[in-house]
Image (tube, rainbow, N blue to C red; front, side, top):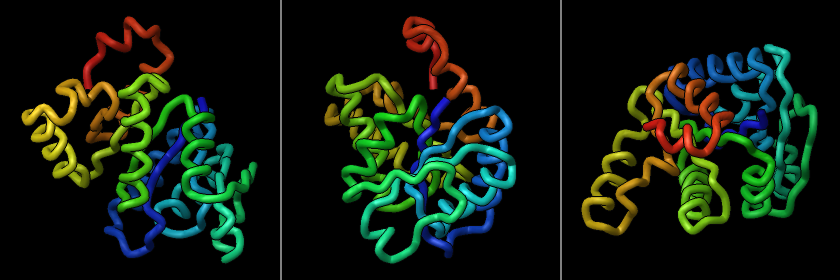
Length: 190
């Protein structure tokens, strides 16, 4: 499968996030998946790329022009897809992805995951974001979405589009469920 991964490009994150990102990248590479990501060579993006390369996986970077101009792109890419800006990058990554995972990240990662979820909610696609909730990183977001659902500003079934997973095995299980028929996927719960 082609798996898009949204994550932070910051280097000053908790070491545990780098460890868990490495474990994910290694597992996805060994399972034969292609990783599609933002193409940067910093933070969790660098960790993802380096581990994917070391594990023999295939790596596609969708790199905005400004990243290329600043020479901040990853040197390990099997395929480099230049794009104009962050909106282009999101559109290309979403279009090429069979599954999408959000790792710890900031405003950019939130923008990416909500773009996927919003487009799904109005019928542009049926893809969901697997929210890898490393060490509870996304707990406050999950609580906020539950609160919004209680106030009816978000569909009460928001977990159909954003699927929180606490462990690598849960993430892998959700990726595997993507292969199942739509009826089987509807019966699975996040």
